[in-house]
Image (cartoon, rainbow over all chains, first blue to last red; front, side):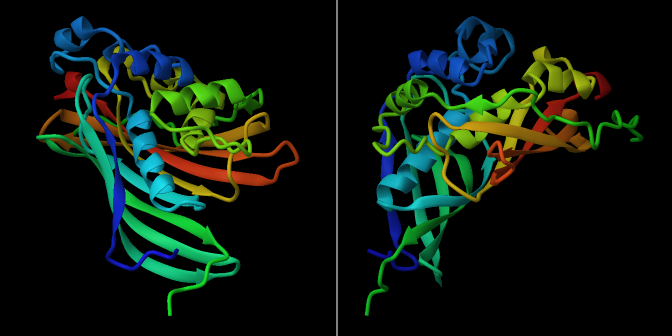
Length: 140
Length: 147
């Protein structure tokens, strides 16, 4: 189904961002930065008391929200800003809103405003996304 | 306040020397780490736009910072990412990585004192040159020593 302009996308929640997950992402990214692995390093740098989630992992939550909210879609474009950190144990929620729908050859392009918010603190990622929905008819 | 010019790094190549392949096993582990199931048709999670380009480029994160005369221990921060896909990413498919530094701009910062804004573009293509995606990342490099 093609979403209506202005509609909210179904949210995607991570109840508790896992420090163990950060260890896995350090391997995926080949990036051993200790601020993602060792709270003592985070404290020493004056960045807080808990390990800091990798920015690309935060963005992966947003992408997963988009793919679940618009089944069958493919991501065409993303443009995001990383505006704050996410810390180990925090709860975050990814969401979005449809801002435009355009007919294209073979389907529709859906433009969205997207975000990731940390509970009680506000946005940590803001931006826009365009997805392609293949071969669907627009609502009458 | 007159700031010293940043290193002239625009145009420095970041092209990789070896193809990057997304393994099905790692894609499955990545999906599990964020609570989603991998696609059964071999499509990789789109976040591999970042991982494949970052890991496959011709520099480590520390090496890229060094090119900019910045110590990675001083804490580079991601400020933004843009990507345009020409086709979805797939597991088991070798990708070539090419790219370059776009700019390094020094500016005063209320929060950091002085910072350099690093912008670089990376592209993924199939071995025959078919474009797959283009991404541009922006990092903030805090220059406390200049504040």
